[in-house]
Length: 298
Image (tube, rainbow, N blue to C red; front, side, top):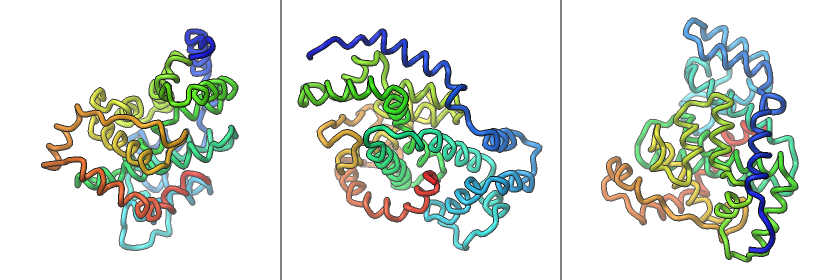
């Protein structure tokens, strides 16, 4: 590999930026108020609905989400109070938090950010699809963990654009001689998965979602909710095989075989054919969930 990488210096720079998250990645005040209310036990649904109603962007997003096929409610929802009663405080909290995080990054431009977000949104949809395949209860955490699985990569590309461009130039020069993930750690001294974990902890995401982001390449290492991490892992692979990749089709990863016993415990005889079946459903599912996805990018 040509050139010096300076991983220790780059890692120090990354960690310094992360230590200053409060300066540039703090959530807006209205969002913090809503998150504070949803974390308490004494707040009424009426109070929460009123707070959401005061922010038109959040309110329209919640209504769009509640009416999407993701939840499959039989009747159209027009009122925030109705959405709150149906979704519950925990779902509302996760949804509002995720919408706010996406907005923090979405306004910044670097190269082709749409490619990264297209992949992220597709993985969110695919994670939900994989969870449904195993007949588990569908919650927002499946889409959200998939949507934000590469948030560490987004952070690198948008807050260290010069360094990120330099790393991608090395990747291109190597012509497939090294994978993105190996080079990323060699260049920055830290992986986007580790960065993602630190960011998710800063924003106080649920522990299972934090571990899913941290372990989306090795879900068997997830301390909490290894099934969620496994769904993100499989979804990520499916999207890359489908060609919905942030960097190009040649950067493939292997399945973490250590999670197979967990998955076969949920669905007997789970095998490669099941992955192909999921792959064939992906385009249709992305189309079905387009309304849900668009609520996060307003």
